[in-house]
Length: 115
Length: 420
Image 1: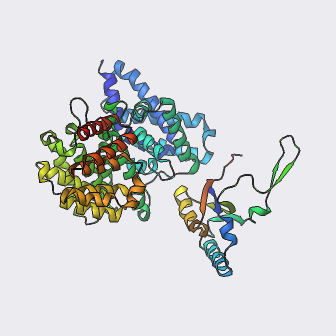
Image 2: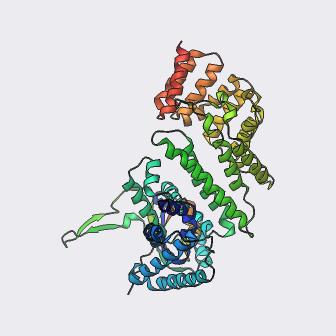
């Protein structure tokens, strides 16, 4: 099955990280990517929510607002797509995402459509 | 022939866990397996009175359920992805062929079912409901009654749980060895919660509640047997420890409530009413568990209850040893509840003041201030220490927090004694 691992962390804390801490985080993600390169099928890191725009188009007309819609403690900061045998394997991989140590990882099955 | 429905019901209660486990193993889907078994039970209720009860009722139910599952999969191939459907069909047909040659053999896949039903990705209440329904063979209506929720609510809970298992890809397998201890912990915790739900006298249908305890013991016994059968698994003393704990606690069932339904404390119980057979089995299991030399919280709690069971009178209770066991338990599971129990044991081993000193620790008081048993324990110790006014205040505080009618009557009786 394919799963999305959605990485939620506290942006405020992330912004306060020192250069050394950021380097260490990058190295940890690089190492994670190497370790699971056979399982990972995609993924990106996202810019902070300050740069986000929310769009709704209830009657086809775009209504644009600044930032994310809801204020929460942790924000979506990036994601991976992984192929895992089942939820147990997906959980094991999610637990190794560096962000899991200071944030949380939401494990979501990717919807499969029949042709 | 009027006995037939009862044979169906008994077969279903005793064998449904195993039949379902085998079906799920081949179908790979909880809902289809359960519907198929339900169809088979209905067919049995129609056919057995006319044609007589088959020689092996469980094998008969399995065969019919398999056929129904095959029909369902063929008819409704869109339910699952095509490849999965074909795999499931092949597995079912192979099982059908095997059954033709060896009608008495139903593979025992229940261990997997325990781990799936108690998977940590499921909400605790979903785990409990699913375990009772799927492994225990209880009806949705019975489970709803035991947990004091409408049947529709419980049915919805079960539907959601099965859907999550399917959609999230919760595996149907015993976890790999490296995950076994932590995953087994979740299974044991679920079973212990079911037991406690039945044991703690509470509002609602008391008879159904007692049968929850009996059901938890039955399920735990099954789990212990299944684990022992797996050669490559190390012995799991905590599973044995939990079963021992349940048996040693359940043995006091008839002594803990009087004819009026009022609570009788451990100290005041008529120990001749304790169930000697359950105590014997519990003590033997505990010895077996301890011999593996890997201690754990359930074994420690069972050991505490074993000390109560071994004391012929309340006065002979080895409270010093019990206090020591609680101290060890606190090292493994440092919870305020364990601290509360340790304080009571220390008070009984030494004097009330020693226990009160532990209870009055500000950090503990702050964490347990909304827990009625904390104030009830404090009241008991103050009563024993000869401070009736302070005791009365604590009994009042406990009463203000306590929802349980049986416990409330006990606290009110004590409060009246203090105010005399």
